Image (tube, helix red, strand yellow):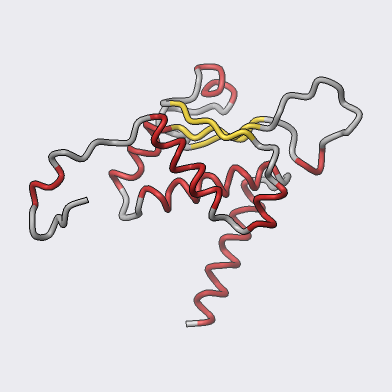
Length: 148
């Protein structure tokens, strides 16, 4: 990308990533996660769509189609049964338009946002609740603050 400080019009040819481009970015972000983490999530299918379906919005009680950045669908590792025949693969959905909207309104890189959403949804694959992950993030922030 051109240097935006020296050429403020360098944004003109820049476009928001397509579904396919965001899927490539997500795959690259996943590839750079720690190997142990990737190994535990090796069977998870990652998909990108513009928005959650109407059924998902209703199930999640979302007030807006922009409310969900991602979603884990499936049975978390601790709850899986090897004997369950015909079990669908665990899937992580990344929602492009809400992610792009979030990116436009925050001072984070697109890659950092995709990584955060992906790791959060993989946390659900591991059987963690939103509350569990919030507690982990708070503890990580506190330990970072103590180290500074």
